[in-house]
Length: 216
Image 1 (cartoon, rainbow, N blue to C red):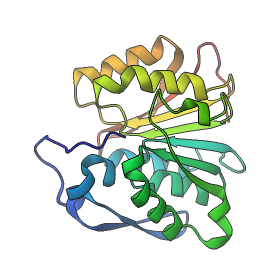
Image 2 (tube, rainbow, N blue to C red; image 1 turned 90 degrees about the vertical axis):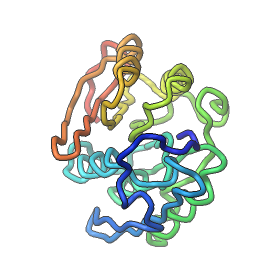
Image 3 (cartoon, one colour; image 1 turned 135 degrees about the horizontal axis):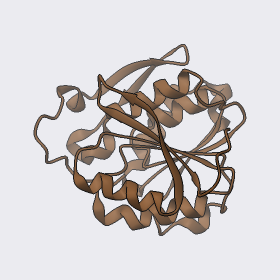
Image 4 (spheres, helix red, strand yellow; image 1 turned 135 degrees about the vertical axis):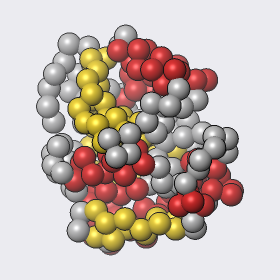
Protein backbone atom coordinates (compact mmCIF):
# COMPACT_ATOMS: atom_id res chain seq x y z
CA UNK A 1 0.00 0.00 0.00
CA UNK A 2 1.38 3.38 -0.95
CA UNK A 3 2.41 5.69 1.86
CA UNK A 4 0.40 8.77 0.98
CA UNK A 5 -1.96 10.96 2.97
CA UNK A 6 -5.67 10.55 2.36
CA UNK A 7 -6.88 13.75 0.74
CA UNK A 8 -10.59 13.03 0.66
CA UNK A 9 -13.04 14.62 3.03
CA UNK A 10 -15.02 12.73 5.60
CA UNK A 11 -12.20 10.69 7.11
CA UNK A 12 -13.54 8.83 10.12
CA UNK A 13 -12.35 9.96 13.55
CA UNK A 14 -11.28 6.37 14.30
CA UNK A 15 -8.60 6.63 11.62
CA UNK A 16 -6.78 9.15 13.79
CA UNK A 17 -6.84 7.00 16.94
CA UNK A 18 -3.47 5.60 18.01
CA UNK A 19 -5.04 2.15 18.34
CA UNK A 20 -8.31 0.37 17.60
CA UNK A 21 -9.62 -2.95 18.93
CA UNK A 22 -11.50 -5.63 17.02
CA UNK A 23 -12.71 -9.11 17.94
CA UNK A 24 -12.01 -11.91 15.48
CA UNK A 25 -11.27 -15.62 15.86
CA UNK A 26 -12.41 -15.44 19.48
CA UNK A 27 -9.74 -12.92 20.45
CA UNK A 28 -9.49 -9.18 21.01
CA UNK A 29 -7.03 -7.67 18.55
CA UNK A 30 -5.48 -4.32 19.43
CA UNK A 31 -4.17 -2.72 16.26
CA UNK A 32 -1.86 0.27 16.45
CA UNK A 33 -2.33 3.02 13.87
CA UNK A 34 -0.14 5.91 12.72
CA UNK A 35 -2.12 8.25 10.48
CA UNK A 36 0.07 11.30 11.13
CA UNK A 37 3.30 9.57 10.12
CA UNK A 38 2.22 7.18 7.35
CA UNK A 39 -1.25 8.20 6.19
CA UNK A 40 -3.52 5.62 4.59
CA UNK A 41 -1.06 2.74 4.97
CA UNK A 42 -1.18 2.84 8.75
CA UNK A 43 -4.88 2.78 9.61
CA UNK A 44 -7.60 0.13 9.47
CA UNK A 45 -10.13 0.65 6.69
CA UNK A 46 -13.62 -0.85 6.48
CA UNK A 47 -12.60 -3.09 3.60
CA UNK A 48 -10.18 -4.96 5.86
CA UNK A 49 -12.82 -5.43 8.54
CA UNK A 50 -15.35 -6.73 6.02
CA UNK A 51 -12.89 -9.22 4.52
CA UNK A 52 -11.88 -10.39 8.01
CA UNK A 53 -15.56 -11.06 8.78
CA UNK A 54 -15.94 -12.86 5.44
CA UNK A 55 -13.02 -15.15 6.28
CA UNK A 56 -14.19 -15.71 9.86
CA UNK A 57 -17.63 -16.77 8.59
CA UNK A 58 -15.94 -19.77 6.99
CA UNK A 59 -16.37 -18.63 3.41
CA UNK A 60 -12.84 -19.93 2.75
CA UNK A 61 -11.11 -22.85 4.46
CA UNK A 62 -7.82 -21.36 5.64
CA UNK A 63 -6.44 -24.31 7.57
CA UNK A 64 -2.85 -24.98 6.47
CA UNK A 65 -3.28 -22.83 3.37
CA UNK A 66 -0.43 -20.65 2.15
CA UNK A 67 -1.63 -17.05 2.08
CA UNK A 68 -0.03 -13.75 1.09
CA UNK A 69 -1.49 -10.35 1.91
CA UNK A 70 -0.62 -7.42 -0.35
CA UNK A 71 -0.47 -3.87 0.97
CA UNK A 72 -1.10 -5.13 4.49
CA UNK A 73 -0.84 -1.76 6.24
CA UNK A 74 -1.61 -2.41 9.90
CA UNK A 75 -1.75 -6.19 9.37
CA UNK A 76 -5.27 -6.86 10.69
CA UNK A 77 -6.29 -9.06 7.76
CA UNK A 78 -3.13 -11.16 7.80
CA UNK A 79 -3.37 -11.57 11.58
CA UNK A 80 -6.92 -12.87 11.31
CA UNK A 81 -5.94 -15.27 8.51
CA UNK A 82 -3.15 -16.70 10.70
CA UNK A 83 -5.52 -17.07 13.66
CA UNK A 84 -7.89 -18.98 11.39
CA UNK A 85 -5.19 -21.51 10.52
CA UNK A 86 -3.34 -20.14 7.50
CA UNK A 87 0.40 -19.76 6.98
CA UNK A 88 0.63 -16.12 6.06
CA UNK A 89 3.20 -13.87 4.41
CA UNK A 90 2.21 -10.30 5.25
CA UNK A 91 3.70 -7.71 2.89
CA UNK A 92 3.98 -3.98 2.36
CA UNK A 93 6.54 -1.37 1.38
CA UNK A 94 9.61 -0.81 3.54
CA UNK A 95 8.33 2.26 5.39
CA UNK A 96 5.27 0.34 6.65
CA UNK A 97 7.09 -2.71 7.97
CA UNK A 98 7.91 -1.55 11.52
CA UNK A 99 4.27 -0.92 12.43
CA UNK A 100 3.17 -4.01 10.55
CA UNK A 101 5.67 -6.23 12.36
CA UNK A 102 4.71 -4.75 15.72
CA UNK A 103 1.00 -5.46 15.21
CA UNK A 104 1.58 -8.99 13.95
CA UNK A 105 3.81 -9.91 16.90
CA UNK A 106 1.55 -8.24 19.47
CA UNK A 107 -1.60 -10.00 18.32
CA UNK A 108 -0.48 -13.55 17.58
CA UNK A 109 0.12 -15.91 20.51
CA UNK A 110 3.64 -17.38 20.70
CA UNK A 111 2.62 -20.73 19.25
CA UNK A 112 1.26 -19.04 16.11
CA UNK A 113 4.15 -16.64 15.55
CA UNK A 114 5.88 -19.03 13.11
CA UNK A 115 2.75 -18.93 10.93
CA UNK A 116 3.22 -15.26 10.01
CA UNK A 117 6.18 -13.77 8.15
CA UNK A 118 6.46 -10.04 7.48
CA UNK A 119 8.25 -9.18 4.23
CA UNK A 120 8.87 -6.16 2.07
CA UNK A 121 7.11 -6.14 -1.28
CA UNK A 122 6.89 -3.25 -3.71
CA UNK A 123 4.50 -4.31 -6.44
CA UNK A 124 6.19 -5.13 -9.71
CA UNK A 125 9.71 -4.72 -8.29
CA UNK A 126 10.47 -7.26 -5.56
CA UNK A 127 8.96 -10.31 -7.17
CA UNK A 128 12.18 -12.31 -7.26
CA UNK A 129 11.91 -12.81 -3.50
CA UNK A 130 8.56 -14.57 -3.84
CA UNK A 131 8.22 -17.96 -5.55
CA UNK A 132 5.96 -17.80 -8.59
CA UNK A 133 2.61 -19.48 -8.03
CA UNK A 134 3.45 -20.55 -4.48
CA UNK A 135 0.30 -19.35 -2.74
CA UNK A 136 -3.17 -20.82 -2.31
CA UNK A 137 -4.77 -17.49 -1.51
CA UNK A 138 -3.91 -13.82 -2.11
CA UNK A 139 -5.62 -11.19 0.02
CA UNK A 140 -5.90 -7.46 -0.52
CA UNK A 141 -8.13 -4.88 1.19
CA UNK A 142 -8.51 -1.36 -0.17
CA UNK A 143 -5.39 -1.64 -2.29
CA UNK A 144 -7.06 -0.44 -5.49
CA UNK A 145 -6.96 3.35 -5.32
CA UNK A 146 -3.82 4.71 -7.04
CA UNK A 147 -4.04 4.38 -10.81
CA UNK A 148 -0.27 4.60 -11.20
CA UNK A 149 0.06 1.30 -9.30
CA UNK A 150 -2.50 -0.71 -11.28
CA UNK A 151 -0.14 -2.22 -13.85
CA UNK A 152 2.38 -3.20 -11.15
CA UNK A 153 -0.36 -4.69 -8.98
CA UNK A 154 -1.67 -6.75 -11.88
CA UNK A 155 1.87 -7.90 -12.72
CA UNK A 156 2.35 -8.93 -9.09
CA UNK A 157 -0.90 -10.90 -9.02
CA UNK A 158 0.07 -12.72 -12.21
CA UNK A 159 3.46 -13.65 -10.74
CA UNK A 160 2.03 -14.92 -7.46
CA UNK A 161 -0.87 -16.89 -8.94
CA UNK A 162 -0.82 -20.51 -9.97
CA UNK A 163 -3.81 -22.16 -11.64
CA UNK A 164 -5.29 -23.06 -8.24
CA UNK A 165 -4.66 -19.71 -6.55
CA UNK A 166 -7.65 -17.66 -5.41
CA UNK A 167 -7.45 -13.87 -5.09
CA UNK A 168 -9.81 -12.07 -2.71
CA UNK A 169 -9.95 -8.29 -3.00
CA UNK A 170 -12.21 -6.14 -0.84
CA UNK A 171 -12.83 -2.52 -1.70
CA UNK A 172 -15.23 0.37 -1.77
CA UNK A 173 -15.87 1.61 -5.30
CA UNK A 174 -15.10 5.31 -4.91
CA UNK A 175 -13.97 6.41 -8.35
CA UNK A 176 -14.25 5.46 -12.01
CA UNK A 177 -10.61 4.34 -11.91
CA UNK A 178 -11.55 1.61 -9.40
CA UNK A 179 -13.85 0.11 -12.02
CA UNK A 180 -11.06 0.48 -14.57
CA UNK A 181 -8.83 -1.77 -12.47
CA UNK A 182 -11.56 -4.38 -12.27
CA UNK A 183 -11.75 -4.33 -16.06
CA UNK A 184 -7.96 -4.76 -16.24
CA UNK A 185 -8.25 -7.68 -13.83
CA UNK A 186 -11.00 -9.29 -15.92
CA UNK A 187 -8.67 -9.18 -18.89
CA UNK A 188 -6.37 -11.71 -17.17
CA UNK A 189 -8.55 -13.43 -14.56
CA UNK A 190 -12.04 -14.78 -14.07
CA UNK A 191 -13.63 -12.32 -11.63
CA UNK A 192 -16.86 -12.49 -9.65
CA UNK A 193 -18.32 -10.54 -6.76
CA UNK A 194 -18.80 -12.96 -3.86
CA UNK A 195 -19.93 -10.64 -1.08
CA UNK A 196 -21.28 -7.15 -0.51
CA UNK A 197 -21.65 -5.42 2.86
CA UNK A 198 -24.25 -2.67 2.40
CA UNK A 199 -23.63 -1.19 5.84
CA UNK A 200 -20.05 -0.35 4.86
CA UNK A 201 -20.52 -0.25 1.07
CA UNK A 202 -17.69 -2.74 0.63
CA UNK A 203 -17.46 -5.33 -2.16
CA UNK A 204 -15.46 -8.56 -2.07
CA UNK A 205 -14.26 -9.89 -5.42
CA UNK A 206 -12.83 -13.33 -6.14
CA UNK A 207 -10.39 -13.75 -9.01
CA UNK A 208 -8.67 -16.79 -10.53
CA UNK A 209 -6.73 -17.48 -13.68
CA UNK A 210 -9.10 -17.21 -16.61
CA UNK A 211 -11.06 -20.40 -17.06
CA UNK A 212 -10.51 -21.69 -13.51
CA UNK A 213 -13.36 -22.00 -11.01
CA UNK A 214 -11.73 -24.08 -8.33
CA UNK A 215 -12.64 -23.61 -4.67
CA UNK A 216 -10.10 -23.61 -1.90
